Image 1 (spheres, rainbow, N blue to C red):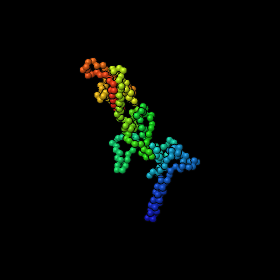
Image 2: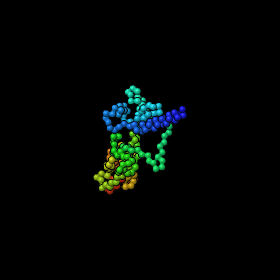
Image 3: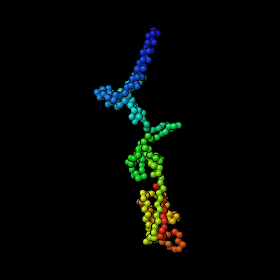
Image 4: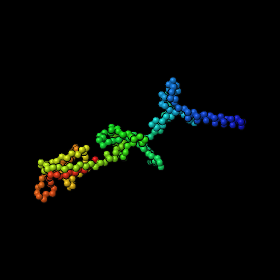
Length: 244
């Protein structure tokens, strides 16, 4: 009886090794279009690895956008289970980069300073690019699609400046248009500062905004001591600072 028991144990161990070998080796062949097993598996489960669980059930596992296991390839008798990144978190979740480890997001869409829609798909850089970009970007969320995108920090917040010097005007009290390239008509009036010879003018009174233009509005002096109104004189210097 003892000898029979020992032989049975050896046989079970041998079966176990065979099973392990079967699990690690059962992959879809890359050739053999007439292989009936491959055809059936490909049609039902895609390119996959065949497994045998501890109950002897044959399953197929594939890794695409997540990990999927498929039990049985028979139509109407399949159970498909997928573990995939996404869904609703039920607990706090943390990702620790750790010493010497990096956390990176590849393939993000870069929105440039002139982008007017979320279709501007440029610079989908990866961490291992042969010629990576330089500088820093900030992550943004597209409210229309929920997609995470990036923008150069220099495009997100810029202080622009224009400096012009004018000769003697034909009419010292006429409105003066100063071109400001790239400034939109929707920029806030209080994100724009206009200076005449170093003195700050009053927003909405001494100047107004348009698309690509700042209109300076001088007013004729009502009296010698009228400090609210002013005129444009020869060689007046105007400086315009605006936040993009």
